[in-house]
Image (tube, rainbow, N blue to C red; front, top):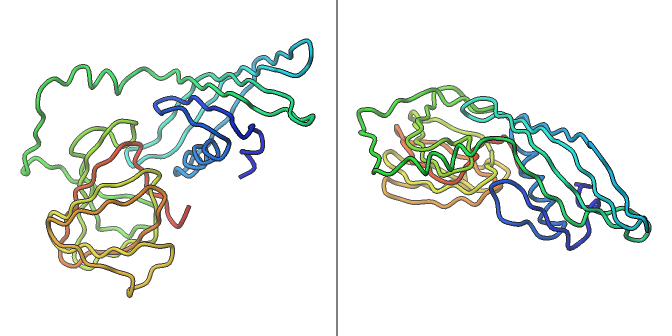
Length: 239
């Protein structure tokens, strides 16, 4: 990605709902994760550019709009940004970038209002079809806690029929997976291979790092519980 060439090597990025991003490589990875979300589209509109009298520093102020498709439906965010640029070997490079979202603090409001323990009984788990590009029909998903399309913590369950197989895919962020019933067959890597599959039984826990492709299926009716920090997305293929 050529994006990193627009930043100084020690550039700082201050983006909504995350710690300070330090250095051009880390900024590139941040934008790569965002652009890897299904249907991701970002537009930036400069509003004003000011250049210092010595023409070595400049500020660029504008607005942005970012949209993508989550398992729960389309997500849209918009906000403002300001960039501080410096001349490096005759070329303008971004030193600091600050992005602020215009979205309300919905997640923080939820945490402020939740003061009691939550519980979902097994009989009240509501299943909906899992609709993800490249995944065959038959699988189901149930959101147990939180909003997988948001930026906070979430918990969901996946239900697979006997013999179900899912293709190579990856997620922007890490997954914490517990097998509740059945047998999960999982292999890591960008090429599906039966010899790479390992079987995991009820009670087994798996930690899958973000952006690591994997594939597999189910032997017997299989239920998984998955939790992590949003946004949750299923991207076909490899990063």
